[in-house]
Length: 320
Image (cartoon, rainbow, N blue to C red; front, side, top):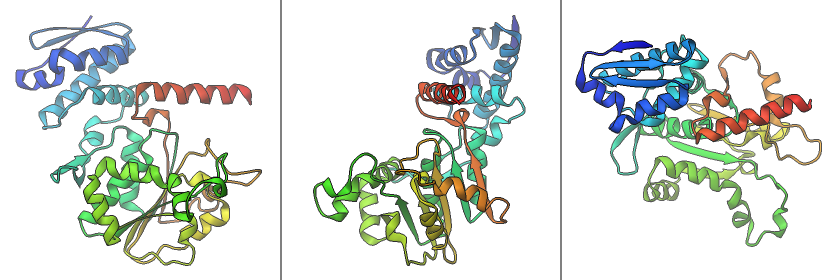
């Protein structure tokens, strides 16, 4: 049995959580047994896991003491971060804040939940073009959207442009009802969903009406020059090499571009090669461009999503 003593009873109440829900989550994540007596925490189990769990508790205590609002999900994220890399600092990751205006109009912040997400946010700050490649649930689109909203709020850019390839994944556009805009709307709907996660529906509609935010299919970017804009190309694995080149050469002065995608989920027809795959080879080493490769460790959705992704990865390795 390993013991850990804390001094501030006020801090440990937030650390433990209501009805010790945070400690219960750590028990589940780490596969250890945790008991408390006053300000003392006792941890039993595999020595390696126990040591990591103790490190998680120490660093989460410091986070709470620094004013961080700890949620149950954060405990699982913290365990995953420390078990993947014992040298990772939770303060460095969780206390990095991207300030936005919440749905209620109040100022709030979004923070990374993994080391990969922290690197991703830093890359967007440092580079004018960033590629984020990784599986579903790693925050590729969400964090890019948050950074775009923050850049707009801080007057770093004048508008946000969100775009996606309109790929015919199993259905032909010609058979869908409505005019062209109505036909492509289902392909763009996930961008609206991501936007509504951060900004209220009414505020989103207002910015769309004023042209401050624009949502359009990738084909509509041809021939344009995008100045003073934060541009996000989502689902870029479904872009062709020609489309990727076209998009990247649209970038004008005072603009940033973030390109996101999952190269394991390409819907391109036939033998067409993904522009997201090729561009990583073409632009490797080009100064001013950042590449972030996120993995299942960075998944921040339902815990089962991480296990599903890992299972598919194992299946693909065994099959090949």
